[in-house]
Image 1 (cartoon, rainbow, N blue to C red):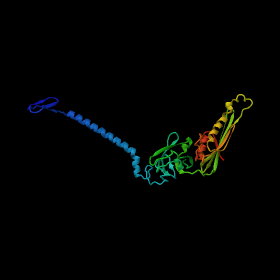
Image 2 (cartoon, one colour):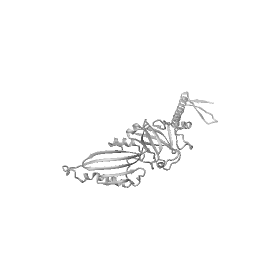
Image 3 (cartoon, one colour):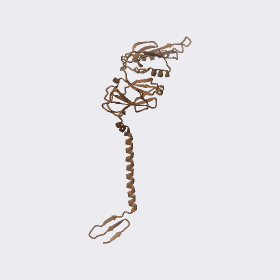
Image 4 (cartoon, helix red, strand yellow):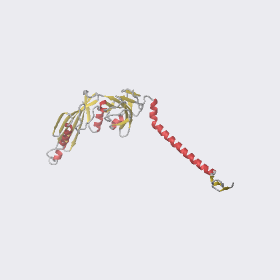
Length: 324
C-alpha cells in the first residue's frame, strides 16, 4: 500500500477501492474553530441573561404582589367594595405609592406629582362599570394641614372593564399644585344638598368707552359648589366732548353683542332667573339640575368644586372674592 502526502491531505490509493481523502486539521485550525464556537455560545448566554434580567425587572411588581396581599396590584374577586390599605390619617399621601383606596368597587392608588402641575394616578375596577358618573365618586386633594383644596368628579369614561389597570391625570392651578399633599376618594350625593354659604367674586375694569363690572355669586353646601349667579353690566361712560370719536356702532354694541351670544348659549340650558337688556345680563346656573346636552355653554366650575379652588383661581385671574 502506498501513501502520498501533501500539505493539506493524505490520500490512500488502492486498486480495489476508490480514492479516499482525509482532511488534515492542524492544531491552529482546531483552535480557531473551537474559539469561534465558544464565542458564539458566550454571546448567546449573555443575551439570554440580559433578556431574563429585563423580564424579571418588568414583572417584579407583579411577582411581589403575589406575596403582598395589601398591594394595589393584587386583584381578587372577593375584595370589599369599600376598603383601604396603608392610609395616613385616612388619606393617601401623594408620591407615596404603598397606599390605596377602594370605593364603589374602584381601586385608586399611585397618586404622583408630574410636570405641568398635574397629578397622575392608577385605578382598577373590581367589577364591570357601565356608567362612571353614576358612581358619584369625587377625588379630593388636601394640603399638609389636611384642609381640602380641590375636588373633582371621577369620570374618565362612560364605562370601565373589570380588571385592567388604567391611568388618569388631574391638572391643578399652580398654587394648588404646590399645596397638594394628601388625596382621598369619596362618594358624594349633591342632588338634594342645601346651600349653606356663599362667596362673591367681583371684577371691574375700563374698556374704551365702557365701565364694566362682573359679579359671580358662588353658592356652596357642605363645602361643595351647588350653583352660581352671574351678573354682567357694561356702562357707557362717554361725554359730550368725546361723543363723536366714540360713536361708532361697533364700539357701542360691543358688550351688547357679547351678552347676546352668551344669552343664546344659556337659553338652551335650564338656567333660572334669567334677564337680559342692553349691555346687561343676569342668570343663575344650578349645577344639580343643569342640562348642557343642547347647549354650547361652558360651566365656570363643575358641581362639587370646593371654595378654596374658586378663590385661588379667580383671584389669580384678577377677581376679588369675599365671603358673604
